Length: 517
Image 1 (cartoon, rainbow, N blue to C red):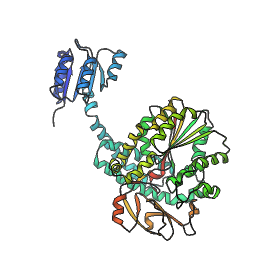
Image 2: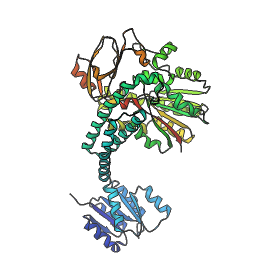
Image 3: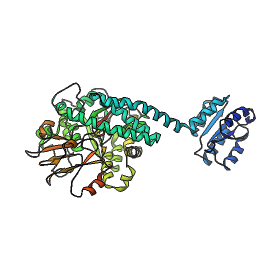
Image 4: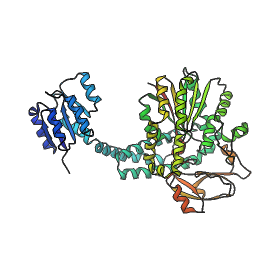
């Protein structure tokens, strides 16, 4: 293994001989100079891993040397060393993107720590992350064998998401594989939990009953609009909890997270059902019955979510909420930019609803477009792609506007998505629904162990297309495939992100309350 090479520039370098010997005994290769000009000449002759730079040298100053070093070799971490604690000097150095800052006199251990922090930190963090997950692996496994309630499931899922993100950074393939297996085990247990409780939740108000799509506004949003000031309700379609956690780093610049909660999507965990339920404050069968002109069935043509504004206005009326609100749905970048221009006019509204469809379009595009498929071939890549989009989207401008105007935000979604991997055969009539994670129809044939079967749609407040309508929901990471052209179908959809069924990623979804800093 090659020695780590260090360039150290200090006009008192001779007095630092003990420090140099200490580092050489530790196996480092140290090149020294007593001037900034000479440091600039040396850096052009050979590569270095790290530079220690004195701020106060005769001739060219440390800050000027720093500036030129950064233009020659911007990738090399530079540690500034100075006798002065003047704020302007510190700010100048930090603004030039130094890696660290030390005040003289420095001792050898400080130098060693600076080297490890800047050159060895990835390895040290990786080892610590792996070690910490190994310790937590057992507690997660034990929890999966217990009778967890909904709050305990949400805490367990948050923990799993955190480890998924942390182990991704560690690049330890062995531990990542162990976690993936544990997630598979957790989804199997969660599917059983939903299967055993879902119908009962919808019919009784048990202590374990989660906040559902149709109760989201009354339980989480209406209490906020009783407080002074406007509220922005931003629904990013198909936003998983792990995606929220990576976006949170950007939100943290502008907002304090007051509540980082999880609620439960209804079944099917898909836009047509879950999002209509959110805005109506009703389950799908109730919408169909009370507002038949505002509900579209699976077999109807056209978009199935075209009446969200009308459904929400009706919900406000039912709950006696006489407030001024706006509703905007962003389907593309152009509309997003136009909405940003209209934001000042929305400040007189008590509630501003913004539905952002990007993440949902991304997940569907991933199925159809080979480029997107390659860009997001696993959860880590999917998170990264979502983060890159958010950083350059009009949605970030909306967030910044809300922060500047001291507006509270409720950020949420209607459902998540799961990366499907295991095909489950299903047979049915020609008019069977096309979704990969749920089906409705009659005379369907399937393996009952793969699905949650609902023979009476009224049990789960879902519309009935005919007398014999049955709903089936795929469990875990399964997806429905037809026997005809089976292999071609499986190859097309395996490892794509889908929604509509039963998994933690689809049903345990974020509801975040944010307050401007």
